[in-house]
Each structure stands twice: as C-alpha cells, then as structure tokens.
Image (tube, rainbow, N blue to C red; front, top):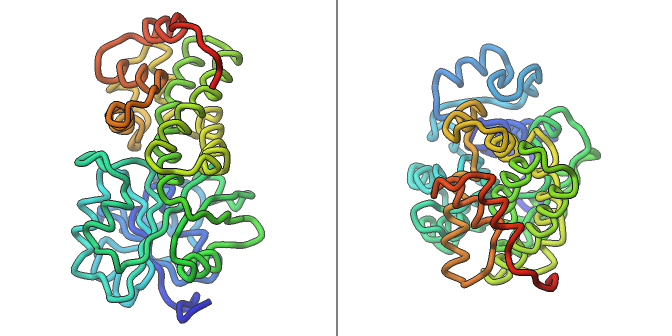
Length: 337
C-alpha cells in the first residue's frame, strides 16, 4: 500500500443496509471504520445494540466500527470517504462534506443511480463539486447487503482511473470471502448499477402477474441488451455490461427477492398501489427515480429501450402493467441484436 494503511480511518457515509455491510467488511479487515448516519436517534440505537437492527438485524458490529451523526467527527483525519446513500441524497451530501475535504481526500461512490437534478452520472457530479484533483472510484456489482454482512462469499467490481487509489482500496476490502474485480470504466460500472434497477422492476412485475420463467428470462436477456445499448451510447465499454457490474448485477437483482426493486415490481404485478408498494419496502426503491432518469437519457441519446420505457410508463404515465406487457409483446417483429 501507499502511505494509506489500515491504521488510517476510513469513513462510510450512509447507514442503510449496504453502507452498514460495507462498513462491517472494512472493519473486519482491520480498518478503523467510521459509519455516519443522518439520524442521531438511529446512531444511539446502533451504539446501544452494537448492531444496525433496523436494516441488518442480528449481526453484531466489529469492535473497530464506530458510529456517529456528526460529519465533522466522522471525517476528522480521514482520507478515504465511501459514500453509500440513495442517489438523490448524493449531491446534497457532497455539499455538506465540502468543508471537511482535505487536500489528499479520495472518494468512493457505492450509490446506484443517477443525479435527479441533472440526470448525470454521480461520479460527474462529484468531479463538478469537489474538483478534478480528488481521486474518484465507483463500487458496484452483484452484492446483497445481508449476505455480505453475514460474511458469505461475494465478488464485486471496483472502478477507478487512479491506480494507487485502486490498489489501496483493494487492500482495504479484499479477504478470503470478498473478491474485488478491477475496471477503468467508471461510466459503464455506474450505469450498470442504475439501469438494472429498472429492469428488475419489470422482472418482478412479470412474476407478480404469473407470467412464468420464460417471460422472466426474456426480460432479463432483452434488458441486458437495453442496458448495453444505452451504456455504450453513454461512453461505457461493451465488456463492462457482460461482466459483474452489468450482467451479474442484473441477474442478481431480477431473480432474488432480497432485491427491493424486484419486490416492488412483484407487488405492482399483483395489483398493489404504487405508493403502498414502495412504502411497504421500508427503504428507498431506487428504480422509481431511475426509471425517469433512464427514460430521459435514452431519449437524449436516441436509444431504443422498450422495457425501460414500459416501466417508466407504468410508474409515471398511469399505464397498467397488463397494457404495458401487451404493448411489449405486440411490437413489430425484428432480428435479435
């Protein structure tokens, strides 16, 4: 490693299930880890229980994991900052931490979504706000928080253009149960994490409507085509979408009910009201915002994404799942691309 070592603290901003799981991984690996939560009540509860019972019940914190609701205290003497908040909270949080950014600060985004204000990649938002001297990285891939927190075998993708930053992060994160694959495609890795959320809602809806394995498989396969098509148009690499952050994350999110986006779609497919379905999940369903952002990106780039458009129409145009499914199935026939 460089002058960054596991004796230097690392900050994880965001104490949802994914942020907490990553903080636990880092702490178990010997890093002094500071987990920040916005709610002081949530922090007090975590301190009292030495666990995040709200999101990861029954899994105790490692000893070198501390929690705080103070950004100043969390970021004191910290170089590496891992942000794990819903995509709509990313920009406001960056503005909040600006007074605590050091000359050698480095930022990792583990958020899956796009900026609702501009529709841009979160990594571009970070560069705009922090400047081009702060090294950036994106963490994404087929990971469920509960399995990571329970120390089950997991692999992920980490993208950065800064080789030393990448090497330092791998050293902090890797162990015999957590494997890190590298990438230099920050665009593709981030887009994979956003677009797959929308497709997962469609897969959940299809299952909720009783369409069966054939329909689910077709949705995943054609969803990967849409993800790749739009991702490449945005500047991502085709190979990224065939890998962990593309196909891997898509398959995971579409096929397992640990996925909030899939469960949301499942509820809608069974006839549940949209707002009620989202409320019952109990956490942010990123696909609700992602559907709008992906729809606008595809229009801007003149890219055909019929599945993503169908989900957008259901969520924002009051089109029923039955009508959306009919429209997809009766589109003009074409050769597979």
